[in-house]
Length: 343
Image (tube, rainbow, N blue to C red; front, side, top):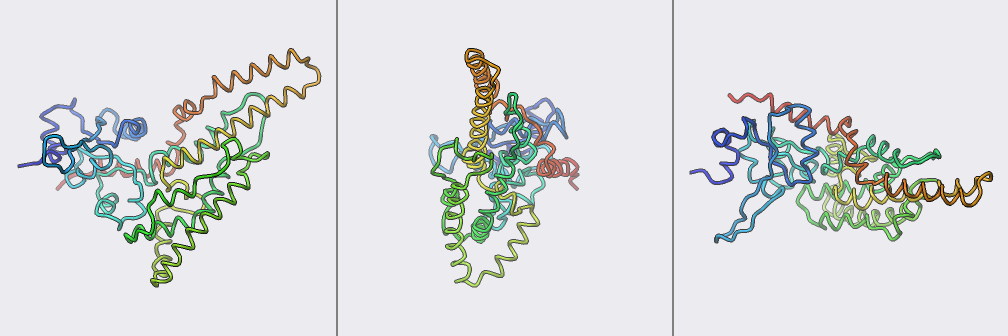
């Protein structure tokens, strides 16, 4: 007799309950639906319904806790097929395939569509998206800046400590958790100071990040050298390179919520704050306007920044990530799954 999770992926069950003749793609939660809908609509429009998978935890009574998210989806991995697939954040499973049985299945199972980076946020905040999103933060004056340079600077600083952490995780060696590693992204300065007067990453963040990353690198390297694992670690670096993890894009492989909440949003908020101040300063410096006109102009520009430049809205409306190479990797795997013909 089939268990409940097997029914969730049984093509006959899906057909019997008639989901408008469509297949099903299970995702982790509602927040991911917009992203995965873009993948599906590009390749298999109107052929799949997106659903949230929910399963019971391993309990003995009727009050079992419902499991959602990736914990529920991993229970479906072994019974997936062309009619029923899952779409998940890769987390560390993509770059650490030996870290768990589910990590190994992520890349090997053609019906597990994943983000080929840490999460959907990692795809959404690609280089082109960052450029276009940040480029919308303006009113009148032109300012030269490049937020992608800040992200590349951060990536270059943490590359060695991150790659060592990932290597140890892949070997199931737990020196510290991913949450502990990501503590290097806690900074002691307010968000409006993330960028300097030249709109570049401020020296204080660079220094704090360098110090924190070096501490972790020293701790990981000691374990690697003490256990004669340096040659193996160097081989793992080649594995990372093959998967697309480079010195200047590590930010796309750290925890997605941390990327958004601790790096991208603070940078965008700081940029918005500084550009608004620059606009106001520009108005104040206009000699041909009297004070009344200047104050009215400043109220107008402030109202524009507060009402028209909502960062969450700008990000939500931006779809330029669909042109990114990682998004194309996701589509390629989905396409191969659609082409699969069981023997």
